Length: 298
Image (cartoon, rainbow, N blue to C red; front, side, top):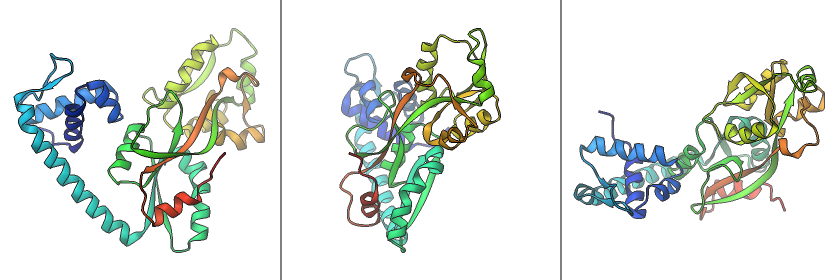
């Protein structure tokens, strides 16, 4: 039997409060199918059904009602222990921990931390790149594993609503690029274009797919990765076209190693915000000092 996951108990409390799988899943920043599986995992671990799914809104079973107070205690004890330990560790190291995408860890976050480190010789930062889903970023932020999240935001991507402060760092765009020889294939309307695609479970895949569908062209997927840097390297090798953030493609576009596909057509571009999220009511200390050094776009 798998070990108890504290996230399952937190999910159960969210569902007990909202009475709706959909609302609770949004609150927990996961898809409804994934949320349902986690509730089922908790029920399997406990050996009994906690939720009466035959009613709307859903209700707790007798076993669910009996478990409710225990669930609150479990989560309360875990959060208190975590907070106390994190506070002691943070006080010792005074380090700002930044959870971010690999792409932004390489191309953007260094420019954000440089002014902070230059102004405060005693300061330190820890950059924590990840390829997990966006919901995992905010779970890590909520659990004090990190101090801030730096990530892309788009109106079709999930994200927090009420629990975190958010500020825009800069604008970026995903644009289709390719080696000049690959770009010449686009001139042949009958050509089967080689495509470097994002992993189907990634947010980038969800953003690019509607654009591909709207072009009405024939593509052949020749490479797949969750990382824009990997697709960039394949594109530079002349293996296919890829949608890359301008931040990632800028140097290669400037020197001609890559060129834009369908230049001037706005429908092929995807506007993105680069945003920084942090917990609210940040007390004086390293984190607040770091946040004060971030760009303040108008």
